[in-house]
Length: 243
Image 1 (tube, rainbow, N blue to C red):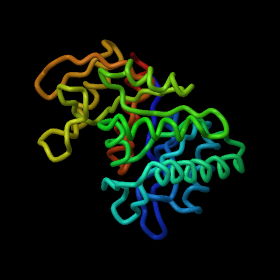
Image 2 (cartoon, rainbow, N blue to C red):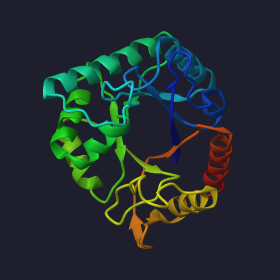
Image 3 (cartoon, helix red, strand yellow):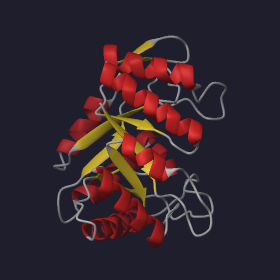
Image 4 (cartoon, rainbow, N blue to C red):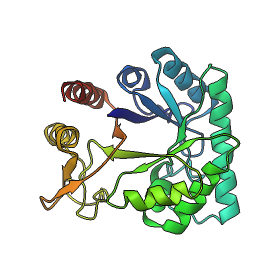
C-alpha cells in the first residue's frame, strides 16, 4: 500500500509541517496550491524535495479560504468551482514540470474533500473538472463502502480513481471519518498502528462501535505535522513492509 501526505502548506512566515523529514518516507505528496496554504516559494521547495526523493506529486486544491485553512464550506457556483480547481491544478502542473516532475493526481483538501464525499452533485462537478483537464489525471478520494458507485461515476467521465484510507482517523459505522468534534476521532500511536496492520492484513477497519468494515484502498493517508507524526510515519512504513 502506498503512503500519501499533505505537504507544502506553509505560507509566508507561517510554518506548517515537517516536509523535509516526511518526504523520504512517503510515496505520494499532496501539495497545496495556494488557496488554503502554500505559496510560490513553498511550492517550489516542496517539489524540489519530491524530485530528490522520487516521490509522486499530486495537486491539493481547496476552497479559496486561506484565512480558514480551507476547513470552511464555501458555496461557489459550478463554473467558479471548476475554474478555481483547474487554476490550482495548472499552477502545480506547470511548477512540477520545472523540476522534471509530472503531476499525477488531484486530491481535494479539507472542507472541499469532505463536502465532495457527502454531496454527489458536488462530487460530479469536481470529477468533471479533473476529467476535463487537458491531459489525464487521477482523482484521489476516500475509500468507503460506496467505492463501486464512485468508480462508476468516474468511469462515465473516463476518470481514474485512487482510493485512500486513513491511518490515524477513527471510522464511523457508515464508512465516513468520525467527526473531529467527537471523542477518539484521532487515533493515538497504538491504535493507529493497529488500524494499519488490520488494513494491510485483513482489508478492514474497526469502526467506533467495534464493527469490521471492509475497505479497498490504493493509498494510506498519514500526517507529519510534528516530530511524533514523522516517527509514526516511519513506524507505519515499517509495518507495511513487514505485512
